[in-house]
Image 1: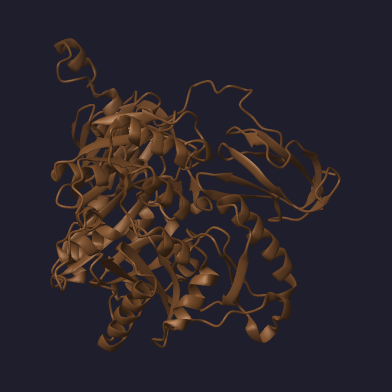
Image 2: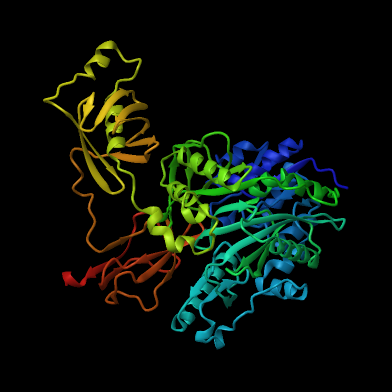
Length: 634
């Protein structure tokens, strides 16, 4: 038995904060590590002690196992928890932690190593009798093998994955997948397997101790994904026959026993439309979506990880599950713009009570370019699936999120979509419904009026003359304000107490009450610099004040391609050079930022007249990348 006293978390953000919460409850002191951009991050402020990892890029900081071990020893920690991502599935790091005399909060390094390569893991699973999809050799693939899914052997999170539906595109897709895998994981090995249309992503949470006990803690459905990364997860996976659940549980336990597993882990499966399960991979770490399992089983998986690492034996059987839990990942990204991540200051992150919120941010924190743009995980638990889904949608709809574009509206609409409500789940959900889920923004007129009224309203503690002067109802002289929202400019002309179709009931700088089409509505307003945020039951809006005299230099030459975010140019289309003909929508180059690759597309058919970047170059937001001259301009 080992008695732990101090824990270093070799991670950042939400998962570090979450692990610290449990560590404190168990009486452990906590140690954080941080890069330079994270010097004032919540996980640093939350820890008892923190150690700087000089630099900004993950390769220089959170992926430097040697620096992390030195930090643990210097701070007096006796254990290291890797969280998820970064070094969490690095067997070499796990061995180095143990060699330094520290306790590793994770599975044995040999188990991590056995599952590190998806190709080798599948060989082990085949020997253990776990059902598998047969691999396809890309060199001999035929039309009968299509569609194919290309996957990176050494990684996950959607990196290095490509769906191929045309043999003529196979070689290009292999090259691109291999390049992305090499960049993300340092290993360009890629393999191919059949792509299952409308399959479900179902996984089993396992927990094992050093005494031979292995728990299968139910199923999770993680089918709603963007770019092969999970967005909404739930437990238990709905609509599975009991025989299939038993098969999945038994296969997950067999996978764990095959590698003498200890600690928390997840075995992932693809379930076909006709109910056949196939092993995908085993994640030898805590999963992002572990809170839904915790809610259903009333467990703390981090606490159990720590106890198992200390040598404690699990009870022979796990507790019985109750109810249903759903989790949504709240990202700083724009789903309507190819899931483009957002950076900047998060002015407000406020989610109504009654739900679990795991986050690494508070009001005023900065979302930077170096890391994943997930702001929070929001989790609900209820006796039934319908109640849990409804509560989660309501909590997200009522959240106040100011400063950055988020996927909040997409999450709310997804949870309320008829297919999701009916548990008709598969990985193609967003391929089919993204346009619908991101279109049809609510009418901004009432919110724009509320913004104008809030701006005009004097503060409650203002002098009496100011309060009276601000509310003169001069019908012959309406007030005018101009705003920009979602790329559209609005001019609001209003009288302080009346507006066509809308009756003003009350207005202060932070709350405006209007009667809209006979219904009383409250509009919560927050003013920050040049931005005004308005939240109501009709939706959330961000308005930018439009200056009376726009800067004439605030213009861009037609055909200019600007960097949509800071990042690194990882690839340029083969043969692309000034003078090359291009067609509308053709990928010209790829930027890597915030753990994702983003394609820069030709805005029109014509000729590339300038290319201002090279592979490996870092660019700032708004940097000129290239110029395309349209055919009609020639």
